Image (cartoon, rainbow, N blue to C red; front, side, top):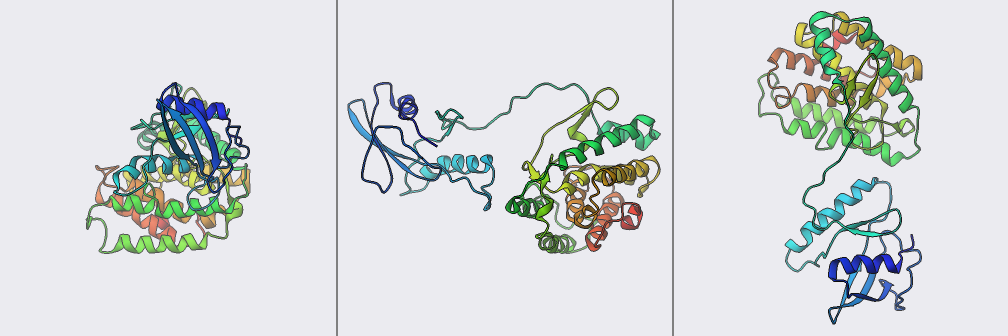
Length: 361
């Protein structure tokens, strides 16, 4: 990008006063200084800035991170997180170079300060509707209606549509698999929140599950061709229905690109979850809805490989719904059935969506 002198000077004036004058700029390591626009100012290329303000000379170095895939720097938000952290932490370590501010570039090349930020917020439009989990609670107690089957088809249609958008970027697929296993919001992070020696688990059972999940991570490394557009947290609390099959989804999470199995299991696990709460099995209308969801999605996408990669994603969703923190009122036998499902799915090579009860045993 080209860094405009006027934009840089305007930013510095907001920090140090309106009498500031930009004297010179040069890329670090170069000897020729200029007050003209900096052509080809690249992310990751530090720029020395010299100025006068209040009758005194001053200097600073402005830098950003290079845009690249891999090493957890794939998304704009990753790089923002690092810069925000550096600004808050550099000045707390003795003998460390001081951070003077953190900010961002707009699409028009303006520099905007964010150095005074303490927490961030998101302003969104208001959506009317009722979360889909209310439907599942009703089906558990009273059975399904024709509308419930229509809504399952609508949701499978939606996922088939968004998953059809593919992306050729292997580091992003590896990241999705790595984070599903090891991220603080996913399997390892959720298990860290489990109490010591829970009554529904055997000694060292969680450690063994983690080891198997790591094995799955390495099994899926060659599947980068599966990278597709995802929602990332497609569970019933993030789906709001209005009349009929009209709905809106909420709270997209953990990246734009990932594995289709992540979205499939986020929803499908809950048909199992609600049925197990009642009978420790997948039965009745919830079983029919679960199987219709899979059948419809597979028919639309032809993605039979999904059933060969789905296990660790089911494991992630299972440790969430079995969590004593998230669901404190569940009985031990319900949690045990969920862990039976989790471990039996991880032990198989291909998931059989028509025989879920064999995994729950």
